[in-house]
Each structure stands twice: as structure tokens, then as C-alpha cells.
Image (cartoon, rainbow, N blue to C red; front, side, top):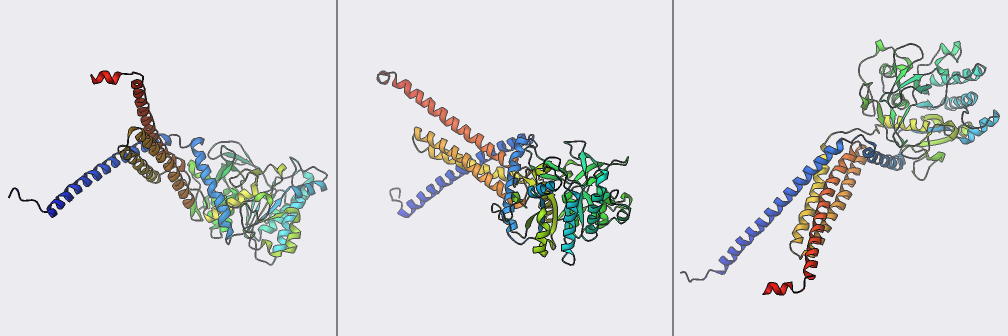
Length: 520
């Protein structure tokens, strides 16, 4: 029996068992090596993330966040405005042409310190009133123009403008700038001193002032530029110190106030309480915030409530209608030179039907031309138009400080790093030494490049899809740095081994006959 040969099938079965066992051991070892490398990379990335969180609020780290949000805004400016607009904006622009024309009438230069003539402003408001009479009412008028009382000799012009604005505010909501001077700069809620406006009533005359319209509101034009002097945020709330010895009040930002008036579903009582700088009685204020565009706002005490990071999506285009660089449609935003407003309204009476109308200046001497993510020269009035649209449609940059998204990116980056590391070592073990070093270095570099491309692509996609960018810098840099550190250590290790072997080879080459002596 002992000499009886084993059947072929048994031999084949036995071979299959041995082969399956070898494959199982191979894959078990491969999975174990991958799991260890992945876990080490995850731990390294978490350590890097914890260290980087210490520098979360530094400008160096936040610059990547700002760059991501700028890409979001440019993309929205090109794409979202190409479709039907939920609200049309008409910008009555006091540009260089209007400034020079009006200054010439006054025998003055259109230079720094030039104040827009009150008579011309009154004519603008009068043109809006007459053109919109009997038609679909404008939704909102935003006056981003200087309205401080002028010297006594100009009271007639002040009263004329005041009367026109009062008549306008009896028909549609009007948001006007209340002149204010910052007294505390660089704080979360800056203290500003509010100065009188001709619309307060003192310059309007007793007859007009006694019939102040309920739709006239005042807002603050204060903006919040970042360290690179680009405006990406607007203040929701500002502490106001009035001229009279009264308690401090909160002066509303023009964007939030304009959006509340434009929304049409806001309780006037709540609105008056949230914006006490206009006309509110604190004792009558109900509790609760103001909900616009799916977001709730209420005066708070924490720093996060002091600012609103808006998404710019209305490009001005340097005053060129239908700017091809952004491709927005004329019904979404129309720009009219102030000096040509009356003529344009006569040619097209429906121009302002149901529109949000902004009156402001873009002439350089106004000092109200700012840098924003869409362009380097945007008038302050257009910034407020962007704020109104952002608040109304919920286009705000959310602040996310959670670790969930960051842990996902760390896991993905660790998978890439572990796969490249294990693949490099496995392939290197099957070839000779010179090629093995090259493979180790190549796979380490591939892991770094692939991680950078994948993680930054996913991070940017997430920012685009959610309009969230706070912490994106930490989220994408932590795993990338971890894989880079591990990859570079592998590269340096392979280089060190290659150099060591090269030195040993050189030493043997320089010692002739050593091999023969060893042979004896």
C-alpha cells in the first residue's frame, strides 16, 4: 500500500490546498502591512492637524480659505446669474462722466472732496418716482450716498432732496446711509459715532418732518476687509454711540437691513427691534431673531455673530453692462449712468419695475471704490447690493469648526499613502538593489503628488457644493503634510541606502586583489 501511487486528482487537490494557503498568508500579510501603515499615517495626520489648529486663525493658514471662497464667488458670478433672476438689480451709477458733468456746472473739479450736488440727487429720486408711478412698484431703494447736513446756505437743496426721499419712502422701502465715524477699530463689534442725516427731519422742514414715512430706514455702510485689503465680509451689527447722551445702540448693516425689507415676510415689530437705530421701542420688542434666506439673525455677544461672510455674485464689471468675463444676463443686473437716468427711463419705462434700485458712486474721487473677490474696483453701493442678495438668498459662507470633514480627508490621504508605500516596497523586493531604490523613491513621490491632487480636489469640491470654507485650509493641509512627511522619509531612507551601497562598492573597487586574498 505504501508503494501505491497517489491519484492525480489527490495530488492536484493537495497542490490547490497548499497554493490557497500560500495565497491566504500572502494577502493576510499584505492587509496587515497596509493596516499598520494606514494607522500610522492617520496618527501622524492627526498630530499635524492638532498642531495646525493652533494656527487656525493666522493669516497664513486663512489665505487658502479666502482663496477657496473667492473661487466660489467667481463661479457663482459666471453661472448662477446666467439663469432667471429672482430679483433684478438696477445700479444708478454716479460715475466719472456724471461727476465731471455735475462738477462742471458748479465750476468745481471732480476730485477728492467733491460732494454730489443735492439738486442732482433730488432729480434722480424724482425721476424714479415719476417713472414708477402707476407701474409695478420697485421692491427696494438703497441710497448709498453722503447725506450729512450741508452748510446753512444749502438748506434749500437739502429740503428738496429730503422731500423727494420722503415721498419715495411712502411708496417703497428705502434704506439710507446714516453717516458714522469709527471710534474703535479692529474690534469684533466696533464702536462708531453716528451723525445726523438730512433725512432725520431737522433739515427737511417742520411740515415734512412731521410726516416721517414708516418705510424709511437707516443702515451702516461699514465694511470688513481682510488683511489683504479685500472685502469678503460685512458687519451684521455695529455698536453705535449716539451724539446725545443715550445708551449704546446697535446700528444694522445695510445688507441685512435691505434683505429684511426686500424679503416682505418679516414682522415689522421684530425688524424694528433688530434695527433700533431707525425707530424702535426696546420695551415693546418681542423675543426671537430674524429669519431670512433660511438663516436666523439676532444681536449676540460672541465674535462669530459680529460678521457675516457674504458670497459675492453680482459683478460690477467696471461699469460695462453684460461684462463678458462673467457672462451675467442684463435682467439680473443693469447699470445706468446717473446723468442718463431720465433719458433711459423715458426710453424704457419698465426698467425699474419690480427692481431693487441702488444709487451710489463709482467715480474714483469718491473714495468708495473697493477691492472684492470678483474684481479690484467695485463701488461700495454694489458691495451692499451683493450683501442684500446674499442675505436674501442665503448665500453666506458658513463657519464650520467640526472635525468630521477633516477626519474623512485624513482617512482618504492615509489610504493613498499606505497603498503607494506598500506597493513600492513589494515591487522593490522583487528586483535588484539599484532598481529597488528607484522604485521606492518613485512610489513615495507618486503618493505625495496624488495626495495633493486628490485632497485639494475633494476639498475644493466640498467648498463649492456647500459654500463652506472655514477650516478648509486645515482640512486639506493636515493630511497632505502627513503623507508628504512619510513620503519624504521614505525617499531619504532610500537615498541613504543607495549612497551607503555606492560607497561600499567604491571602497571595494579601490582595493584591488582584496577578493583574491579572501579566496585564499
